[in-house]
Length: 412
Image (cartoon, rainbow, N blue to C red; front, side, top):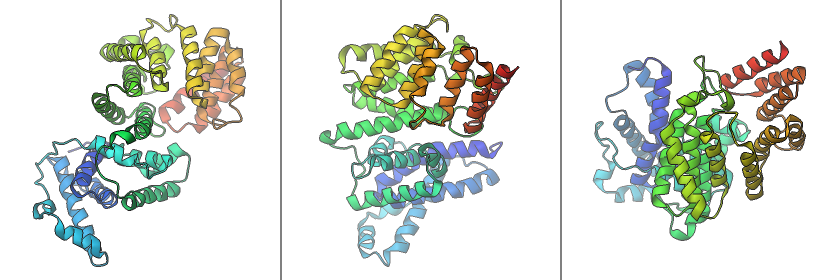
């Protein structure tokens, strides 16, 4: 029996994409399969906290989802003759739900990932559908990450599923000519999934290890299939080098611990060694890309024996390369921090001014960095004000508590 609803919720989130992958492979109808899985998850969320988690939760979900799918097909068949014909043509054993203890052996997540990144969909729909189907994020969580209302996101996801059906999208890895463009989308989605797991945008926990673990699992599989892809290698190294610090990111009270103050003895040295080895080999042999540069930055941080010994000049140079390869406001925000470490907080604050009129205007991360640099510059009152405003806008409670603690320290 679970001790609370939260373990059940996390268990369901971790199993959802596997059940969906199994159904889509079996029936090929993404829209109906996704609806059937959502119904199975709702049934489990109702039954498991009351009756206890079954011995074979994956088999339980599979059976319920298959039954829901069959119910839907049968209900729709009267008015949809073509789908009824397809149902009748299915092998009889394909309509028999597996026994509860029949664990799914085949891992379908990679194929599901590429299906969600089908070229018939817009980039934003690809991202949204993948975060829903593969990462298991709720519509509300995805809406928050896109800064749109939940209703709008729900409609976008529904249209994406309908578009996949109309395009006749198939559940399989794309042919070689389509690999490149779809791979870029897949990598971006995995990057977003990992970031949401590493720094949850909402909720009481700073991290969501299931999400980071799933993103790492998928990018490892991609790397195994595409070892010549420099950016796949770069993203895998970046995830390893970042996740290696995960255990030290919060203190005993659950509050965020900034990088400079972390206990480095808690960092995962095996993950650091693996990530460093991958990025070192990749930088020497592949065309440079944004994920590789970010991995190189993470490696510089991880290899420093102390915060004071960090090679900020090298990090600043790498951020300048990153901005040339892939200009974006988050890279500029991070470069402001590196610039402040090399040339002083006033230089960093001047760079932040360039972001005040862009997409990060009013974002809590921009305010938090401004507060940090104001504090370094000796403007404690202004720093306290910025910290409080950043805390008001942050969605993660551990981050809110950290920002409020810093505000109080500056005000004292």
